[in-house]
Amino acid sequence: MGSIQLKGVRKSFGTVDVIPGVDLDIKDGEFVVFVGPSGCGKSTLLRLIAGLEDTTSGSIMIDGKDVVNEAPAQRGLSMVFQSYALYPHMSVRGNIAFGLKMAGMPKDQIDAKVKAAADVLNLTSYLDRKPRELSGGQRQRVAIGRAIVRQPKAFLFDEPLSNLDAALRVQMRQEITRLQRQLATTAIYVTHDQVEAMTMADKIVVLNAGRVEQAGSPLELYDHPANLFVAGFIGSPK
Ligand code: ADP
Ligand code: MG
Image (cartoon, rainbow, N blue to C red; front, side, top):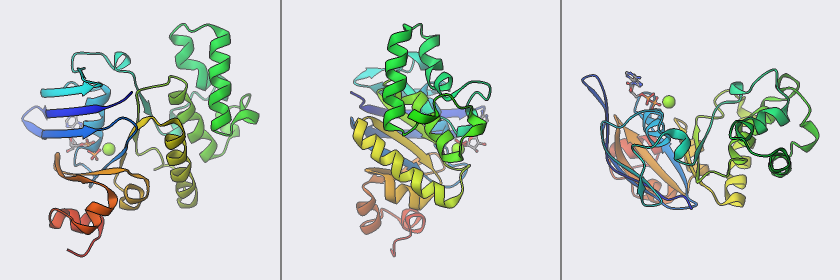
């Protein structure tokens, strides 16, 4: 399971209210995209959910339990970083297995999980390669593999494709949505790219200056934008 609720989540850095207050309801298995202009607080909100930043106030519930006082590792979420966050000296197998090894999982269980992840990611024949011997798309798949093997309640993606060229970005978008549907794992995906939001999301959350302007399906936002900001950002003719 992986439902996530935010209630009155606020974050300030010093005197600056970066997130003045966010309420949000994410259902188990939903693909949710946070979209908004650069600096609007997307990464901060994701990091609050991940536990990489402390909330100033408010509550974050995962499957009905408030996790604001839990460390990142206790929350059962997996952050997918950009592909350059791989360990260059380790093989694909080593990179995917790393978190499980750290957690002390027995080797046969690790091997089974790495094999299953490599299967769904089409990485089976690349397990002994080093990251530098892979294409950009393959590297990104390894980064996703690291998250998958931990069987998280939710995947958290922060602009994972921004390093890739345009054609590969389109392909990886499709692969990530296909994979998310196959695994039926909740996903929160941060992007400043409207097209990415419209094509990937079950639910889009439009952020502006740390506030939710509107949350809804791509069609709802396109057909019934709540205000001019949403209309302008999504590109519909309000
Ligand atoms: P986005 O991901 O939407 O581009 P961020 O969440 O990274 O936006 O940043 C939102 C705002 O919070 C920005 O104005 C940024 O400068 C500020 N901010 C982010 N992290 C910190 C920090 N650790 N200390 C101070 N200000 C920060
Ligand atoms: Mg960001």
